[in-house]
View (cartoon, helix red, strand yellow):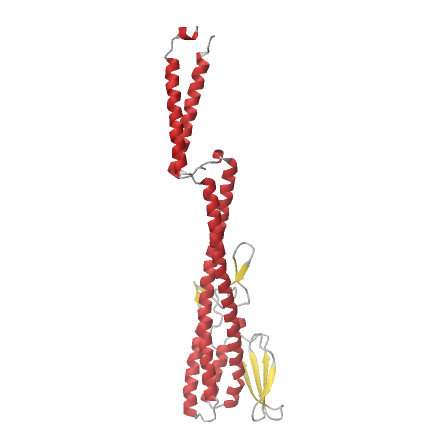
Amino acid sequence: MRVNTNILYNQIVDSIAKKNKEIYDAHEKITKLKKLNRPSDDVTSYFKASNYKLKLSNIEQFKRNVNYANGSLSFVETQLNDLNDSIDRVIELMILGLNATEDSVSRNAIAQELRHISDFVLGISNKTYEGNYIFAGFKTDQKPFPSINSLYLGDSGQINVSLDGVSFININVTGDKLFSFNDFASTSLTTPDNKYIYYNAQADGSLKIEIRDVDNTTVLKTIDVANVMDGIYKLSEAFRSDDLISARALTEVVSYAKNKIVIAQTEVGTKLSRLEKQTETLDEIDFIYKKLLSDVQDADVALVASQIASIQASLEALRLSAAKIFSQSLLDFLR
Protein backbone atom coordinates (compact mmCIF):
# COMPACT_ATOMS: atom_id res chain seq x y z
CA MET A 1 0.00 0.00 0.00
CA ARG A 2 1.14 3.60 -0.55
CA VAL A 3 2.21 5.47 2.55
CA ASN A 4 2.31 9.26 2.81
CA THR A 5 5.85 9.83 4.05
CA ASN A 6 5.17 13.50 4.81
CA ILE A 7 2.45 12.57 7.29
CA LEU A 8 4.67 9.93 8.85
CA TYR A 9 7.53 12.38 9.09
CA ASN A 10 5.35 14.99 10.83
CA GLN A 11 4.03 12.44 13.28
CA ILE A 12 7.53 11.36 14.24
CA VAL A 13 8.75 14.96 14.60
CA ASP A 14 5.73 15.80 16.78
CA SER A 15 6.37 12.75 18.95
CA ILE A 16 10.04 13.67 19.40
CA ALA A 17 9.12 17.28 20.25
CA LYS A 18 6.54 16.05 22.80
CA LYS A 19 9.11 13.80 24.44
CA ASN A 20 11.66 16.62 24.56
CA LYS A 21 9.01 18.85 26.19
CA GLU A 22 8.32 16.13 28.76
CA ILE A 23 12.04 15.90 29.56
CA TYR A 24 12.27 19.70 29.88
CA ASP A 25 9.28 19.80 32.25
CA ALA A 26 10.71 16.95 34.30
CA HIS A 27 14.12 18.66 34.59
CA GLU A 28 12.34 21.88 35.63
CA LYS A 29 10.55 19.98 38.39
CA ILE A 30 13.86 18.60 39.70
CA THR A 31 15.60 21.98 39.44
CA LYS A 32 12.82 23.87 41.26
CA LEU A 33 11.75 20.87 43.35
CA LYS A 34 8.18 21.75 42.32
CA LYS A 35 5.79 19.71 40.25
CA LEU A 36 3.58 22.77 39.79
CA ASN A 37 5.36 25.63 38.08
CA ARG A 38 2.47 27.12 36.08
CA PRO A 39 -1.32 26.76 36.00
CA SER A 40 -1.19 24.60 32.88
CA ASP A 41 0.69 21.90 34.81
CA ASP A 42 -2.50 21.04 36.73
CA VAL A 43 -5.22 23.67 37.00
CA THR A 44 -7.00 22.09 39.98
CA SER A 45 -3.82 21.45 41.95
CA TYR A 46 -2.45 24.90 41.08
CA PHE A 47 -5.65 26.47 42.48
CA LYS A 48 -5.31 24.42 45.66
CA ALA A 49 -1.67 25.43 46.05
CA SER A 50 -2.55 29.10 45.62
CA ASN A 51 -5.24 28.77 48.28
CA TYR A 52 -2.85 27.05 50.70
CA LYS A 53 -0.24 29.78 50.14
CA LEU A 54 -2.84 32.43 50.95
CA LYS A 55 -3.75 30.55 54.13
CA LEU A 56 -0.08 30.35 55.12
CA SER A 57 0.41 34.05 54.43
CA ASN A 58 -2.52 34.86 56.72
CA ILE A 59 -1.15 32.55 59.40
CA GLU A 60 2.22 34.34 59.26
CA GLN A 61 0.43 37.67 59.77
CA PHE A 62 -1.49 36.27 62.74
CA LYS A 63 1.77 34.97 64.18
CA ARG A 64 3.26 38.46 63.90
CA ASN A 65 0.14 39.85 65.59
CA VAL A 66 0.47 37.34 68.43
CA ASN A 67 4.17 38.11 68.85
CA TYR A 68 3.48 41.83 69.03
CA ALA A 69 0.60 41.33 71.46
CA ASN A 70 2.75 39.06 73.60
CA GLY A 71 5.58 41.59 73.65
CA SER A 72 3.27 44.47 74.49
CA LEU A 73 1.38 42.63 77.23
CA SER A 74 4.58 41.21 78.72
CA PHE A 75 5.91 44.75 78.96
CA VAL A 76 2.65 45.89 80.59
CA GLU A 77 2.86 42.96 83.01
CA THR A 78 6.36 44.03 84.05
CA GLN A 79 5.14 47.57 84.75
CA LEU A 80 2.18 46.24 86.74
CA ASN A 81 4.50 44.07 88.82
CA ASP A 82 6.73 47.07 89.57
CA LEU A 83 3.64 49.11 90.35
CA ASN A 84 2.30 46.43 92.67
CA ASP A 85 5.63 46.24 94.52
CA SER A 86 5.58 50.02 94.90
CA ILE A 87 2.04 50.06 96.31
CA ASP A 88 2.93 47.24 98.70
CA ARG A 89 5.77 49.38 99.99
CA VAL A 90 3.43 52.38 100.30
CA ILE A 91 1.09 50.23 102.42
CA GLU A 92 3.97 49.22 104.68
CA LEU A 93 5.08 52.83 105.12
CA MET A 94 1.49 53.96 105.61
CA ILE A 95 0.92 51.47 108.42
CA LEU A 96 4.21 52.45 109.98
CA GLY A 97 3.50 56.18 109.72
CA LEU A 98 0.04 55.84 111.29
CA ASN A 99 1.54 54.07 114.29
CA ALA A 100 1.13 56.38 117.27
CA THR A 101 4.61 55.51 118.53
CA GLU A 102 6.30 57.10 115.49
CA ASP A 103 7.75 60.58 115.94
CA SER A 104 8.12 63.43 113.47
CA VAL A 105 11.67 62.41 112.57
CA SER A 106 10.65 58.92 111.49
CA ARG A 107 7.59 60.30 109.70
CA ASN A 108 9.80 62.69 107.76
CA ALA A 109 11.87 59.72 106.63
CA ILE A 110 8.66 57.92 105.62
CA ALA A 111 7.50 61.04 103.79
CA GLN A 112 10.75 61.23 101.86
CA GLU A 113 10.51 57.62 100.70
CA LEU A 114 6.87 58.09 99.74
CA ARG A 115 7.84 61.09 97.63
CA HIS A 116 10.37 58.94 95.76
CA ILE A 117 7.75 56.25 95.23
CA SER A 118 5.26 58.79 93.84
CA ASP A 119 7.89 59.89 91.30
CA PHE A 120 8.62 56.27 90.42
CA VAL A 121 4.93 55.47 89.92
CA LEU A 122 4.60 58.59 87.76
CA GLY A 123 7.39 57.20 85.59
CA ILE A 124 5.54 53.90 85.26
CA SER A 125 2.33 55.69 84.22
CA ASN A 126 4.24 57.26 81.32
CA LYS A 127 6.09 54.16 80.13
CA THR A 128 6.38 53.52 76.38
CA TYR A 129 6.62 50.33 74.35
CA GLU A 130 8.13 50.70 70.89
CA GLY A 131 7.62 54.45 71.16
CA ASN A 132 3.97 54.27 72.23
CA TYR A 133 2.60 55.25 75.64
CA ILE A 134 1.12 52.02 76.98
CA PHE A 135 -1.39 53.60 79.39
CA ALA A 136 -2.75 56.34 77.09
CA GLY A 137 -5.43 54.41 75.21
CA PHE A 138 -5.57 55.39 71.53
CA LYS A 139 -3.51 58.53 72.25
CA THR A 140 -0.28 56.57 72.13
CA ASP A 141 1.73 59.69 71.29
CA GLN A 142 0.34 61.61 74.29
CA LYS A 143 1.96 61.48 77.72
CA PRO A 144 -0.97 60.39 79.90
CA PHE A 145 0.24 62.08 83.11
CA PRO A 146 2.63 65.00 82.44
CA SER A 147 3.01 65.73 86.18
CA ILE A 148 2.22 64.36 89.63
CA ASN A 149 -1.00 66.34 89.96
CA SER A 150 -2.19 66.28 86.35
CA LEU A 151 -5.43 64.74 85.21
CA TYR A 152 -5.43 61.87 82.72
CA LEU A 153 -4.74 63.14 79.19
CA GLY A 154 -5.20 59.86 77.36
CA ASP A 155 -8.50 58.22 76.44
CA SER A 156 -10.27 54.94 77.16
CA GLY A 157 -9.48 53.42 73.75
CA GLN A 158 -8.98 49.66 73.70
CA ILE A 159 -6.27 48.53 71.27
CA ASN A 160 -7.25 45.17 69.77
CA VAL A 161 -5.18 42.74 67.71
CA SER A 162 -6.59 40.04 65.43
CA LEU A 163 -5.54 36.52 66.42
CA ASP A 164 -7.11 34.51 63.61
CA GLY A 165 -9.31 36.78 61.53
CA VAL A 166 -12.29 36.13 63.80
CA SER A 167 -11.22 36.65 67.42
CA PHE A 168 -9.36 39.63 68.85
CA ILE A 169 -7.42 40.42 72.02
CA ASN A 170 -7.05 43.72 73.84
CA ILE A 171 -3.38 44.54 74.47
CA ASN A 172 -3.49 47.70 76.55
CA VAL A 173 -4.52 48.95 79.98
CA THR A 174 -5.79 52.52 80.01
CA GLY A 175 -4.51 54.97 82.60
CA ASP A 176 -7.97 56.11 83.61
CA LYS A 177 -8.75 52.60 84.85
CA LEU A 178 -5.44 52.21 86.64
CA PHE A 179 -4.42 55.63 87.96
CA SER A 180 -7.61 57.72 87.96
CA PHE A 181 -10.70 57.38 90.15
CA ASN A 182 -13.47 56.91 87.59
CA ASP A 183 -14.56 53.68 89.28
CA PHE A 184 -14.13 54.88 92.84
CA ALA A 185 -17.44 54.31 94.64
CA SER A 186 -18.55 57.36 96.60
CA THR A 187 -18.47 56.40 100.26
CA SER A 188 -17.74 57.64 103.77
CA LEU A 189 -16.13 56.38 106.95
CA THR A 190 -15.77 57.41 110.57
CA THR A 191 -12.38 57.87 112.24
CA PRO A 192 -11.52 56.56 115.73
CA ASP A 193 -11.98 60.11 117.08
CA ASN A 194 -15.48 60.31 115.56
CA LYS A 195 -14.67 62.56 112.63
CA TYR A 196 -16.12 61.85 109.18
CA ILE A 197 -14.38 61.33 105.85
CA TYR A 198 -16.34 61.53 102.59
CA TYR A 199 -15.06 60.34 99.22
CA ASN A 200 -16.58 61.56 95.96
CA ALA A 201 -15.26 60.63 92.51
CA GLN A 202 -15.34 63.54 90.08
CA ALA A 203 -16.32 63.53 86.42
CA ASP A 204 -12.74 64.41 85.40
CA GLY A 205 -11.36 61.27 87.08
CA SER A 206 -10.09 63.00 90.22
CA LEU A 207 -11.21 62.30 93.78
CA LYS A 208 -12.48 64.80 96.31
CA ILE A 209 -11.95 63.90 99.97
CA GLU A 210 -13.81 65.90 102.59
CA ILE A 211 -12.93 65.63 106.28
CA ARG A 212 -15.70 66.76 108.64
CA ASP A 213 -15.75 67.39 112.34
CA VAL A 214 -17.70 65.31 114.86
CA ASP A 215 -20.86 67.24 114.04
CA ASN A 216 -20.65 65.80 110.50
CA THR A 217 -21.24 69.28 109.14
CA THR A 218 -18.19 71.42 109.72
CA VAL A 219 -15.64 70.80 106.95
CA LEU A 220 -12.19 70.64 108.48
CA LYS A 221 -10.26 69.95 105.27
CA THR A 222 -10.73 69.12 101.63
CA ILE A 223 -8.17 67.07 99.72
CA ASP A 224 -8.32 67.01 95.91
CA VAL A 225 -6.48 64.00 94.52
CA ALA A 226 -5.82 64.10 90.77
CA ASN A 227 -4.51 60.54 90.42
CA VAL A 228 -2.87 57.71 92.36
CA MET A 229 0.59 59.28 92.16
CA ASP A 230 -0.84 62.50 93.52
CA GLY A 231 -2.46 60.53 96.34
CA ILE A 232 0.92 59.01 97.30
CA TYR A 233 2.51 62.45 97.13
CA LYS A 234 -0.20 63.96 99.36
CA LEU A 235 0.23 61.05 101.76
CA SER A 236 3.93 61.91 102.00
CA GLU A 237 3.04 65.55 102.71
CA ALA A 238 0.57 64.48 105.41
CA PHE A 239 3.27 62.47 107.19
CA ARG A 240 5.81 65.26 106.76
CA SER A 241 3.46 67.64 108.58
CA ASP A 242 2.21 65.05 111.10
CA ASP A 243 -1.30 65.42 109.69
CA LEU A 244 -2.48 61.94 110.64
CA ILE A 245 -6.16 62.46 109.87
CA SER A 246 -5.29 63.40 106.27
CA ALA A 247 -2.95 60.42 106.10
CA ARG A 248 -5.74 58.18 107.37
CA ALA A 249 -8.13 59.62 104.77
CA LEU A 250 -5.63 58.84 102.00
CA THR A 251 -5.40 55.16 102.95
CA GLU A 252 -8.51 54.53 100.85
CA VAL A 253 -6.69 55.90 97.83
CA VAL A 254 -3.90 53.38 98.34
CA SER A 255 -6.37 50.51 98.87
CA TYR A 256 -8.21 51.48 95.68
CA ALA A 257 -4.93 51.54 93.74
CA LYS A 258 -3.93 48.13 95.09
CA ASN A 259 -7.25 46.63 94.04
CA LYS A 260 -7.02 48.10 90.53
CA ILE A 261 -3.50 46.79 90.07
CA VAL A 262 -4.44 43.26 91.13
CA ILE A 263 -7.38 43.26 88.71
CA ALA A 264 -5.15 44.48 85.87
CA GLN A 265 -2.49 41.86 86.68
CA THR A 266 -5.09 39.10 86.59
CA GLU A 267 -6.49 40.28 83.25
CA VAL A 268 -3.07 40.63 81.65
CA GLY A 269 -1.96 37.22 82.96
CA THR A 270 -5.09 35.63 81.48
CA LYS A 271 -4.42 37.28 78.12
CA LEU A 272 -0.80 36.09 78.08
CA SER A 273 -1.98 32.52 78.72
CA ARG A 274 -4.44 32.86 75.85
CA LEU A 275 -1.66 34.09 73.56
CA GLU A 276 0.51 31.12 74.49
CA LYS A 277 -2.28 28.74 73.49
CA GLN A 278 -2.94 30.71 70.31
CA THR A 279 0.73 30.40 69.34
CA GLU A 280 0.49 26.63 69.68
CA THR A 281 -2.73 26.57 67.64
CA LEU A 282 -1.23 28.67 64.84
CA ASP A 283 1.88 26.48 64.74
CA GLU A 284 -0.32 23.39 64.36
CA ILE A 285 -2.41 24.96 61.59
CA ASP A 286 0.76 26.22 59.89
CA PHE A 287 2.18 22.67 59.88
CA ILE A 288 -1.03 21.24 58.40
CA TYR A 289 -1.20 23.73 55.53
CA LYS A 290 2.51 23.40 54.77
CA LYS A 291 2.01 19.63 54.52
CA LEU A 292 -1.00 20.10 52.22
CA LEU A 293 0.96 22.54 50.07
CA SER A 294 3.93 20.22 49.89
CA ASP A 295 1.74 17.29 48.84
CA VAL A 296 0.23 19.38 46.04
CA GLN A 297 3.21 21.24 44.63
CA ASP A 298 6.47 19.63 45.75
CA ALA A 299 8.13 17.19 43.37
CA ASP A 300 9.11 13.66 44.34
CA VAL A 301 12.70 13.76 43.10
CA ALA A 302 13.10 9.99 42.91
CA LEU A 303 9.85 9.62 41.01
CA VAL A 304 10.69 12.44 38.59
CA ALA A 305 14.16 11.00 37.99
CA SER A 306 12.55 7.66 37.17
CA GLN A 307 10.13 9.40 34.80
CA ILE A 308 13.05 11.17 33.06
CA ALA A 309 14.81 7.84 32.52
CA SER A 310 11.60 6.37 31.11
CA ILE A 311 11.02 9.33 28.81
CA GLN A 312 14.62 9.26 27.60
CA ALA A 313 14.31 5.55 26.83
CA SER A 314 11.11 6.19 24.88
CA LEU A 315 12.75 9.08 23.07
CA GLU A 316 15.77 6.99 22.14
CA ALA A 317 13.50 4.21 20.85
CA LEU A 318 11.55 6.75 18.81
CA ARG A 319 14.74 8.14 17.32
CA LEU A 320 15.95 4.69 16.36
CA SER A 321 12.59 3.91 14.76
CA ALA A 322 12.67 7.18 12.88
CA ALA A 323 16.18 6.53 11.63
CA LYS A 324 15.20 3.09 10.44
CA ILE A 325 12.05 4.31 8.71
CA PHE A 326 13.66 7.22 6.91
CA SER A 327 16.65 5.16 5.80
CA GLN A 328 14.33 3.04 3.64
CA SER A 329 14.11 3.80 -0.08
CA LEU A 330 11.08 5.03 -1.96
CA LEU A 331 10.69 1.60 -3.52
CA ASP A 332 10.22 0.11 -0.08
CA PHE A 333 7.06 2.15 0.35
CA LEU A 334 5.74 1.28 -3.12
CA ARG A 335 5.69 -2.48 -2.62
